[in-house]
Image (cartoon, rainbow, N blue to C red; front, side):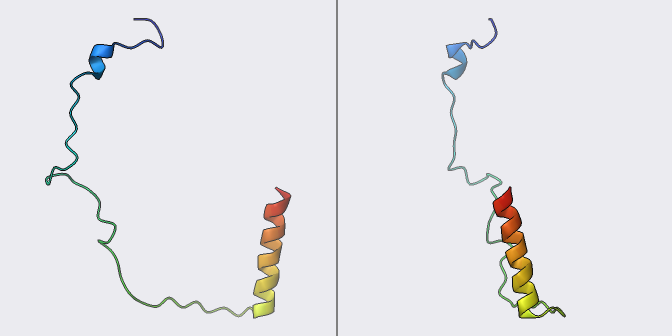
Length: 62
C-alpha cells in the first residue's frame, strides 16, 4: 500500500465493549473533599487589584 492509503478490511469487525464492568475508568469523585482554603498576604486589596489590572493589560497586548 502506498502512503496515505488504508485497507478497508482493517476497519471491519472491530468491537468495542464500553459497558464492561472490569474497565479501569477514572472516578472524578475519588478525591473529592469539602473544606476551606485560605490565603494570607501582606498586600492590600488595592495592590492586588493593581497587579490584576497589570496582568490583564499584558494579556491584551499579546
